[in-house]
Structures are given as C-alpha cells and as structure tokens.
Length: 198
Image (cartoon, rainbow, N blue to C red):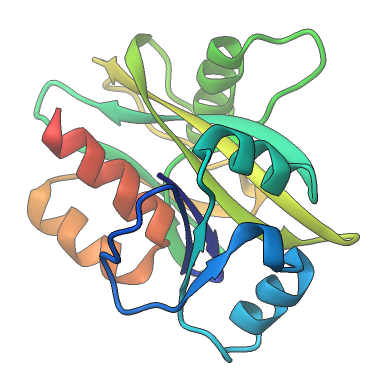
C-alpha cells in the first residue's frame, strides 16, 4: 500500500479488496487524478482509497500524472534519546530538502540536516521510509521524501537556517514530541510512528 497526503488528507493506493477505513473506494483506472486532488484540497473529500489490482503498476501510473520532486531528510536521535525538530511556517517538522544534481540520497539527507539545523557529527544509521505529499507551486507536484535514521552527539548551539524560514531547532523528548505532533503534518507523524516500531 502507498499513502499520499493532500493537505494532510490521505490517498491510499492499494491492491487489497478489504476496506480498512471509512473513505470511499474508486478504481484507479476510472479516476482523473487532478479531480481527486482538488476534491481533497477543497475539503469535499476527507480521504480516498484507490484500488489497483497490480499495486506497482498502479503506483507507476499514478506517479506518471505528476511532476515528482525528490527530497531527503533525517530523524536525528541524540544520546538522550531526544529527536531533532525544526519549526517552520508555524508547524513542527523534521529537517529535509531537495536532492541536488549529482548528489546521492544519503548525501542530500546529511547536507540538509546540517544546513537547516547547524548540527554536525551526524551518523546515518539506516533508511526509515519514504513519504509522499502533493503540493501546489507552479502547478501540482508530488514530493517524495526519503527518510533516514541518524544519530549525533553534537553538543554545540543549534542554528536554524533562517533563509529557509526555519525559526527554531530543538531536540525534543517524548512528551514534547507528542505535543509538537499536534501542530505538525501527517507525514511527520508517519515518520515518527515508523521509527517507534523499529
């Protein structure tokens, strides 16, 4: 199954015929992607299931309707088991950014975390998951973000990358994370939940 968020509303792309949520089910081959996206954006739908008998084929078909932008980021854990968060556009988020030409996904993840947070001594532990969300900037785009678990024993001052709109960078404990996730994005919840299940 694939999950794509549009303004925090889910599109579940599935090959399962068992309905696992309250959202309507449509056949992928019968829908116009842009119409579905706009219904989710305009609050006419709260979520949707798209059924494709061949999941991978269906996913490639779905992707082909978008301009896909690739990014990478990190869930950074310090020795106190706290997680690094950034505050941008009035929401708590995790550091991430676009993959630049000639860069590997891992290089991007480390560079973006360093740039956005002013942190060093990052050690990439392992891939975590890939998230997807639709955004509107010069048309409709799909951002795929490759997430990695990282660690750092950095004890210096964290510096938010102000030119990227980041106003705060902080390590948060479990209680602070629970509070932050109430003012975050569904994809960030998904990243954190996946980390907890590891």
